[in-house]
Image (cartoon, rainbow, N blue to C red; front, side, top):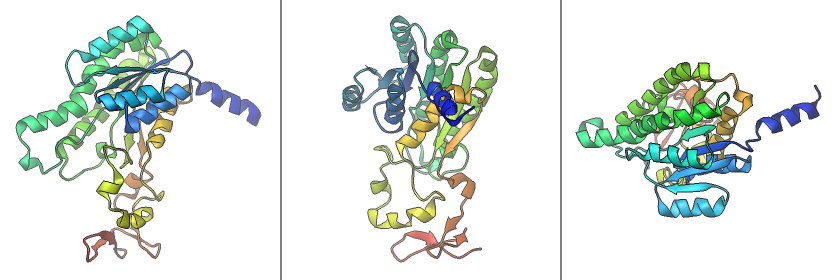
Amino acid sequence: MTAVDNAKLAAQALDFAGKTVLVTGGGVGIGRAIAEAFAGAGAQVVIAEIDPANADAAEAAMPSARVIRCDVRQRGVGAMLAERIAAETGRLDVLVNNVGHFVHARPFAMLEDEEAEEILDVNLGQMLRMTRAMIPLLRKGAPGSSIINVTSIEAHRGIPYCSVYAAAKWAVTGFTKSLALELGPEGIRVNTIAPETTDTPQVALDIMIPPENRAHEERWIPLGRFGRPSDCAGAALYLASPLAAWVTGSAINIDGGALAAAGWYRTPQGEWTNVPLISGNGLVVPGTVA
């Protein structure tokens, strides 16, 4: 095959015309970027969004999208969404479970039971309910339909002060692998996207990291920067497309190499170290090689 033939095949694989895609929390951040990417690829996009302002903005940016204002954490919302999608399109080809949040970021010993339960439901419970509600519609789109669960790089490592959040994200990883086995014989693929810190309103880098400290960013992440929502959108398009026809039960780490680095950083001199130092202003900077 020629390069032109390969390019045509790739373009066809990323053509989602006639496909229906549901993105939860698709009004802002990573969810918004994913929704826009699928809309740009020709899909009929359905967005579930809790925030009225974000819903309005998504509607204005994507006139062809169907924006449904709802709280996916509420029981019964998944069934309601399934009914509306069934009535309007009759099938679902891609489910993107994007909703999740730290909710209460502090030491585990300080969490109340109700707070821990809220973290678990936001990051795991609602996703389980949404997925179960959508499986009948996904079966109508199979073979070739896909579930993409947006987790976090914390689904593969520890994170202080967010122990329950991490537990939920690790659980999503186990759920994804197991559901992939259950649905594989029906031609439904299930995968995860695990982002490292990504610049969104939920995790605004200029608030988390003062601008004067961002000069160290190129040494903190092997690829030299933190994430952008578009990084996750590209991975979602790939996982939902025929290009990933033999990919299921897998995770794509959208992390610039951070997990592979596993605590290694580059010094200002360009050397690698796993021993950080604390500067006089409290900034953690790379030290010398251990």
